[in-house]
Structure formats: structure tokens, C-alpha cells
Image 1 (cartoon, rainbow, N blue to C red):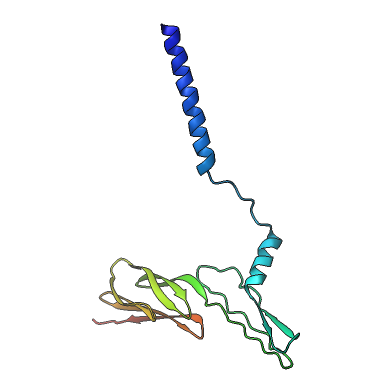
Image 2 (cartoon, rainbow, N blue to C red):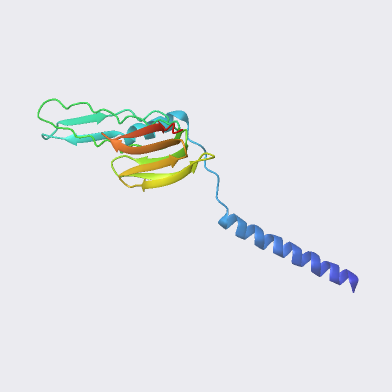
Length: 177
């Protein structure tokens, strides 16, 4: 009787393992090989190329270089376009600059997400010790945060101008005795 019970248990466990393995094969994400550096460069170059046809048979291509890698405090400049020659015309739509930047003043720190051409959005704001924070505007046209203490005011404003992030930090100390 014990041998029959052990045999039934082993059979049930084996059947369960096979079922779990079959389901796992169906729902498991298969690995994808990473892109080579040249494949990445080709994909980026294709993203910034516009082709326009003017007269029959005349084609002009305008290619803008992809943006450089972004750091946390700077945003890339939009690519320049090459003017078309002859009767064909070419139009390149410059992608909106998208960047997240952190700015620090004496009174505190803010992080802003720029989608220049669309929105400016406050991601986070944090006053330093001894300062009170007043969020005057969290977007979408501009971000404006003021940090105040008894003897100092800091203000950080951020907006987009000419398609580029434009921060402005002002510090004001008042020595009232």
C-alpha cells in the first residue's frame, strides 16, 4: 500500500512539473539580443531624417544629427536643418526638447520636466532646513517656486524659450536688525 501511495505521489508531482513547465514556456518573455552601437546609430539617424520630393524625380533629404547624450542639468540643442537647393523644398520638424533638470538655490531644490514646445512640469520641490516653500506655479507654461526664511528668499523659475529650457534663480537676503 505504501509503495502504491509513493508511486501515485511521484506521478502527480511529475505531471504538475510538466504542466507548470508548459505554462512557463508560453508566458515567459524570450530574451532579445541588445542592439549593436552601429544599429543604435542607424536608428537614431533614421529618426532625424526627413525626405521631401519637389518636382517629379527630384528628391531632397535633410538630415539632422541626433541629440547628444543628456545630463541631469542640461538639455540638447535642437538639430539644425540643411536648406534645400533648386526647386525642391525641404522641411524638417525639430523634435521638442525633452529633459528633466534639477535646480538648487539657497532655500531649496526643484526638479522640472521640460517638453519644450508642449509643457513645463514641476516634478518635485524640497525646501532646505529653515525655509518655507510656496509653489506659485507647477506648469504647464512655467514652474515658479519660492523658498522663504526669516532673512532670505530664493526663487526658482523655469520655462521654455525658443524651444530650450530656461531656468532663472534669484536670491534675496534681507538684513533687518
